[in-house]
Length: 51
Image (cartoon, rainbow, N blue to C red; front, side, top):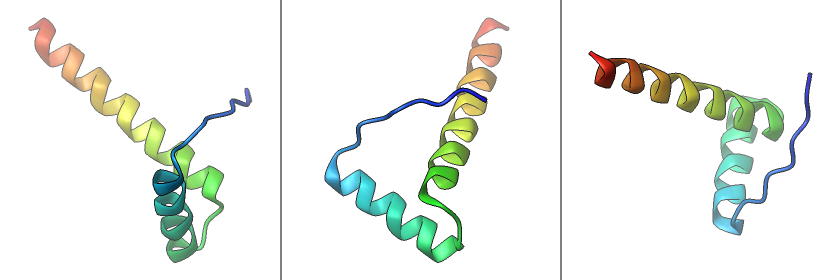
């Protein structure tokens, strides 16, 4: 698996830290899940626009 570094504003980092804590997951996993979901949404939107 490839690893990336991402810079986040302090407020965004705090949001994901709280979300991870509430979900009982690592912050990295929560960020990964959010990015994966967003990528899927963008792909569906692109497919929809193609039609």
